[in-house]
Image 1 (cartoon, helix red, strand yellow):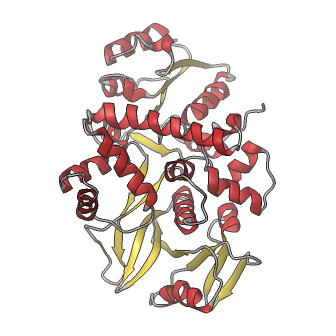
Image 2 (image 1 turned 135 degrees about the horizontal axis):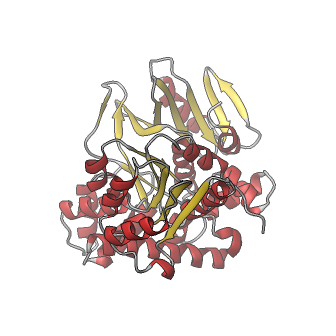
Image 3 (image 1 turned 30 degrees about the vertical axis):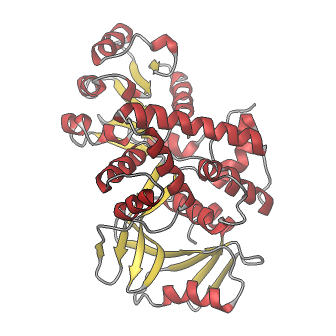
Length: 402
């Protein structure tokens, strides 16, 4: 099987070489960080003056590297002074005190450091304290629709889009295949691995049944507004007594492991972020679908919204849920420099009532930033309705907001 290079990420990494910067690939396990790191290894190994120091903490060959002292010893033993040394470490958070080692080496001459990690806490704790802003986080997501087509050698059509919506973008599915039973077993296994290694063990969680119930609740209610208090009340109604504080902690752990993403509400009129009632989306809609089970017939709009959210992040937007008086705008998207866009997600605009709701909410926004409705409405690729662009989901996933 021919390896497919995820060139976007390789380019992002290489832009930071030579800048005394630690490069950190973050994201959920099994979204392809290790694959990208191996591709980078093979790419730089071809350079005559390069030397690779590669450590994969998920392989038994590196079990002896448990602390930063072990890591220091291994790097020192393998450094070559007259070459450009590339220190590449996969799942660096599994090395106790790793940030001490990174701090020691990242300003050394002829050393480039690229590591992967599956927990965002590594960027908010000792690492950021020790080295300040001298690291570059590159967030790796599951496959885009375009990558999904390449990985599975599929045509760009509605059937392929349906497969992407159903099975998601875990790169490992290219070996498993897009069979319903096999893919669901694989996705469930990945989910349990992430939950065990990056949530339960890392945070020493004791109430595992509640954690699993919470994830299923979030999966079943993806894209709905919830507060920690409302989740706590729901769990109590189901016979599970849990405090709001516990809910907040558990949700934070899930977000840190990139299982789900918490999206805050933004008051479009008052230009402020609300402090409660957020939405939650899954890193991979395939895992979300596996947890919920069944077909997408009853929850297609939730999944479409999840897919759109992930692609907006992939396009580099910071995303909020918009609130304009009593109206909800699915996504308020912004980039540095003042760029902004508003996006409504819908399944099919089949009647005037649906059109009035989706387009009417956007028309109520009294500014000149671009506004979009993204749907799977047949025969619509791109159209203009009084200044609001109507995009088909496939076109958006291929070309972005254009």
